[in-house]
Image (cartoon, rainbow, N blue to C red; front, side, top):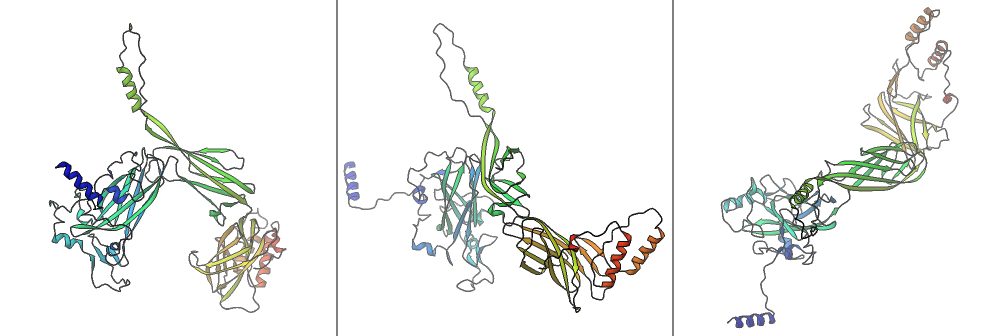
Length: 559
């Protein structure tokens, strides 16, 4: 009889009739791997071998391009987005997150049901229904909500029963993660997260694949598949940000000579594996200034020459760990006439050594080519003056800002006029400039009406951009006390009675010991007679402090 069965089986196989064979996880999930791929990896904690059988009756398997994918979700296709915090330093944890993106106008509510968003129109217009999938009602009608039920559909593809934690009834999606010849399955809502420890895993790139199923009566329907690469490395992932005042574009790694560059080291350690480690930084800026070693992740450095420099950073982290047990060695043969020595003490020493803490050093490296050029280092407003108009303008005041700079030659000047808080911009204007080596120019701008304004003046060229700000108060045309605010200092101009009082005090004390008078610097105003009076009064009060500003002699261009 046995011989007849074997012959019958051979005939069926030769006839090409299909023989049913249970699918395994690797058949369903291992699309990119050969059957024997990565079998040498250590067992991941909480994961199972993909040699286990897959219940295809409860969890159907569809190939890519199957027409059933188009109808697996009401209203369109669901997209799964898989992300991770790769690269992961070996021995640390790496976390994967899957987020489901539903078709337009659909979302998950607090009960885990899928509902239509209010007042949202998709290609089909406004939906008259509230629910896309009302799983709460389905659970009440069936035995899904009965945690004591022995229903055969409340299980994962490998036959393991669903866990029943608090609020588990609102988890309507089944996520199956697969990597390194192993899988992990869990219930979830529209997002799922899983972490694995990378200890003893092979360095390099690996693939994580995720398949997502949704509830469908007493079975499940696949709705999305996604995969992504991740990396395990023995080098600390390091990145350095470089920033500098007045630098126009820090991303091009071109910086200015004579200004400090701030180097800030960012270590990619999302699982906080290095939190208890001693970390040191070795800086080499490539300009023959030597090697700097510090425990601080930020450092300032100023290049004093133009050119290209090779920046190198080495990060070292000392990680505490358990010393590996030494390999056992064969005992030395003893002469037959010698009494053997007990070896119990030796095994105890090995155990003690294995329990001691070792220091494991991990390193990270960062290199960059830095270009240093001449740039605009500083900008200052040294004088603000009214522009005398042939005919008074009732709602318009023109002001000249005398500006100087240091460093490179500017090619453009921009000014913005804002409210007193410097937050709301009212007007902005830019124009090209041509200045000599003294970098002296006059910027003329108009102000609409009286009030206090914040004025930003910016000088720029291809590599740099320098900014300065000032507050200025524009008085009304009929004001007897015009005010100006320059760089935060209020300048009081006008008030003839005040000057008469000062002159009287001066005449009273002219034969007494001189005492300095508080600063009350004057500015140019629109009354010529008053300006002449102010200049003469100033000369009489302070004969040894005559104005020597070269701006009184030079005439900068007006822009």
